[in-house]
Image (cartoon, rainbow, N blue to C red; front, side):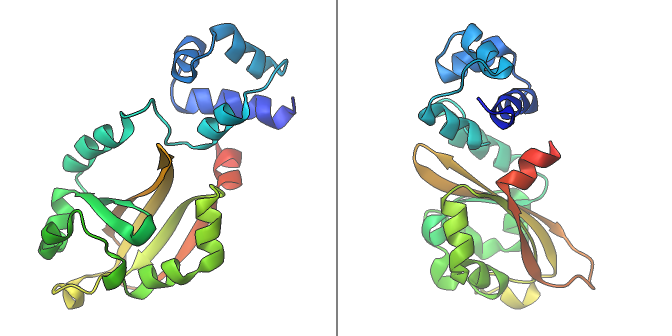
Length: 200
């Protein structure tokens, strides 16, 4: 087992505040197996490696339910979507205050009304392929208005972090935005998985 995998397993466990016992329970293995991974005596299976690389992974069925509750109580503008065609699943209160007409879009695909930086992101084929492969963990964006709704001309500048994660085979994006300085330049920057691991 390489030094990188040994370090990755330990960092994953510590990042999520897990003991070896709890991590073993989540992955369906014995505690001694996790211990062997961290010593470098063994390595996770391909399926386990995929779960460990997906920083949003939790036991089946629990993650999206937890996110719904989290988004409901979020003090910032926040939205959860299925990344494919941007099907909107949940919005926070501040997101609805920012753009009230979005209440009618829950359960619908936002791709047809995407504009500005969001349209650029969706048309960036290499970026979308990297996101689909799990190579890109998140995007940091500065935007004005990214959806053609009735509030389009009233939206100020926002700094938004979009985090991508797979759950039960579906790719989701969790976007949290806060007002940005008036002189901020619209655009986006990808954060690669390697960068996330290196900074932990």
